[in-house]
Length: 231
Figure 1: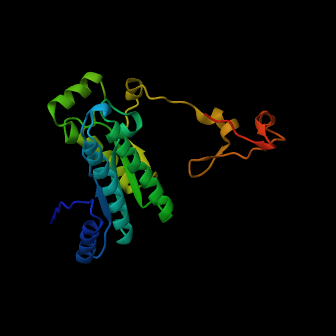
Figure 2: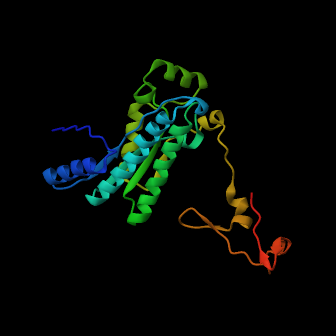
Figure 3: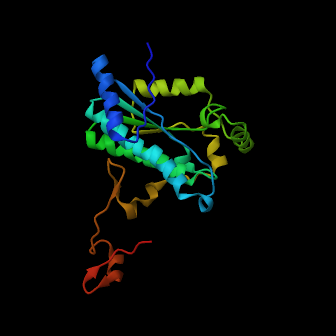
């Protein structure tokens, strides 16, 4: 039996009421899939403020409300759908890319707050003619760029594996052949540890500075206080 409601996830109370009804009717809430999103390709200089808000609010506010409601209803797992555009960007998609990156960061913050992997964000690549790539002009542009397009059967296999064993807060499905085409900046940041310090479990870098060992700090002393130059 399939019941397919289509609520607006932006009002917090409405979505929480929906999850409460599901848990009441079925006794538990195993999985919440958040696939909310709109995309309006346009150069940022020509993008109306209302359109920016639509893209951001649809993705970001909905995700915040869904995560909060799922936590309140003790849901097993929230699956947030994002996009690889958040990593590499795309022509005409600055706001869409930003919204998807926020979803990934919200997922990480939610798990840290809950103390467990309560949510996973999937950063999807472009699909092969379904979803947002269904329009012929969009699909034509992607193929002209030579990007690898994900077919639904392969996507289902990838998603099923991450549902069975969720090991990461954020998972990106990317074809390695696309890295060169997308001109992604890849660098080995291990060489930066002399300045940045050791990487912590939260993905941050921690470094304690001491004028005794970091002699270069002596060149940045004003009235006896050392200042850290940064750019």
